[in-house]
Amino acid sequence: MSINKKFSNLSCGLTAAVLSASLLSMPATATEKVRWQVPLAFPSHLVGLTTPVKHLSESLSAVSGGDITLRYYEPGELVPPFEIMDAVSSGKYPAGYTWVGYDQGTIPALPLYSGAPFNMEPPAYLAWYYEGDGKKLLEEIYDARNIHPMLCSIIGPEGAGWFKKSITDLKDFDGLRIRFAGIGGKVLEELGASVTMVPGGEIFQALERNTIDATEFSQPAIDKMLGLDQIVKNYIMPGWHQTLTTSHLLVNKDVWNKLEPETRALVEMGCESATLKGFAQSEWAQPTALRDYAKEGVTAQVLPEPVLRELQKVTDKVMDAMAAEDEMFKRVLTSQRTFMQHHSIWHGKGYLPRDFYQYD
Image (cartoon, rainbow, N blue to C red; front, side):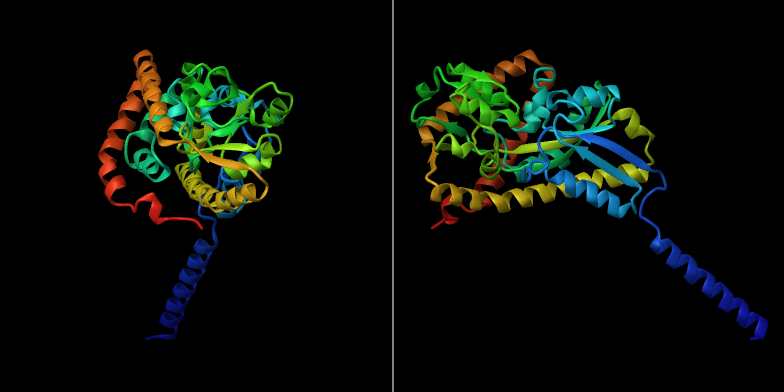
């Protein structure tokens, strides 16, 4: 081999090496810059419920080399929590991170996505959402609103609420002035309760001023952050009305469609990562909160099974009526019920009974 040939091969090799090193050092995303202001429905410190937005923001910035920046704002800084969907739909803001159940008055099917009574637990819900009809139907729902929705957090069941008196019978709900969200609120209205929707940041004051007699909000660790245990000492469980709670990143569809495919893929993967992170954070925090409650004199009452069975009957009646009035609600509910029936053989036979997993 000639000297010139050797130098030619060496030059090609060095060029390839330099090119490979350059490619490896490049951010794994498109070169476009994304700078989004993102209003939040809940304070950013609420574990599992809103903390995943921090994970999402930091992860997207890191993987894109700073090209994708999501700056999130606390509730009310940009828009009130109940107005996030409209702000994103109109393009006032490119995206929002919210609990979609707030918009049930406009879109009746949304509570089936934000957390419904006697519904799936998180593992089954994720299967239905990603592998079944869930994601496709949600995108269809929001298409008319010019929004691209993404599941961006999931946590387990809530507490059933803070009550000044124990609940031993369905009659105990009659006449209660209670803050209750989603379809569960309609169930309690059916039982004679006066239901109101108060934003999370206003619940403490409403309880303190006796504007309401009882309330639910979220899981034990989150309720503790709001200080609800400082006013009421009787905590009701389990969260029959929300077997899970989700948060979603809503993106204006015009903004979404203009993104490069690589950027869209990164945001989608970011939300999937945030969903896993939120669930892990939430499951880690709940047992500590419950044990702290016990030390502080909070009574965590578990509803008797007969009461739960009766609540389920009323729930089925309420949801059947809602399905008769709204075609999309019917489609989503039918899809969920069909999958739950199919999944039940695995749910019932594949997992150990609850009492194999005992405390103390």
